[in-house]
Amino acid sequence: MGRTTSHRWAMLRNLVTSLLEHEKVKTTDAKAKELRPLAEKMIGLGKRGDLHARRQVLTVVRKAEVVRKLFDTISPRYQSRNGGYTRIVKLGFRSGDGAPVSIVELVTEGKEAKGLKKRRMGKRRRKEKGPAEATKPEAPASRP
Image 1 (cartoon, rainbow, N blue to C red):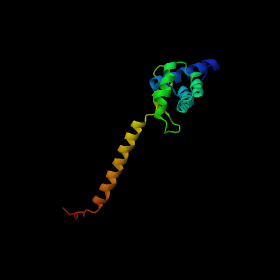
Image 2 (cartoon, rainbow, N blue to C red):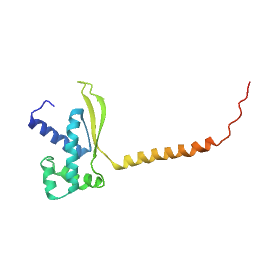
Image 3 (cartoon, rainbow, N blue to C red):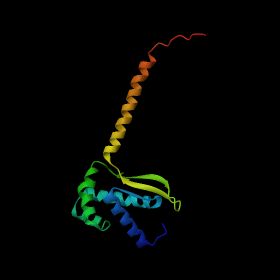
Image 4 (tube, rainbow, N blue to C red):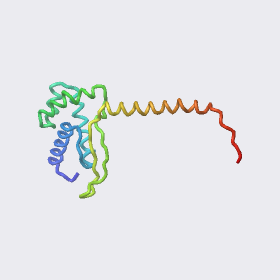
């Protein structure tokens, strides 16, 4: 990403802290791809919930209130999920320099489940209507 190691590490730590604090962050595609594995690891450590995991998170996330939020509210959301805690949504290109921009956000269970339920109901309705329409006799074609 064109930065020194210390600058890159500081930037990624700030991005992870912002992501966990706001649950969504807008950044370039390259930064988003670098951010994702680190954020996934922090949430995985939050799921463990022991003192050693908390200390490991504190080496990356420097705000104590964000660490508290991670362990108390964010991690319990994903107890039944094995990975895939974040999503990258591509937005297009930035107007100033043309850099590809994305949003990195934490996946929420409620939105996905709601969307899947609607899709399933739609498929069922189509299946039920399909055979009923097929059994209707067609009207004979009339010639003008």
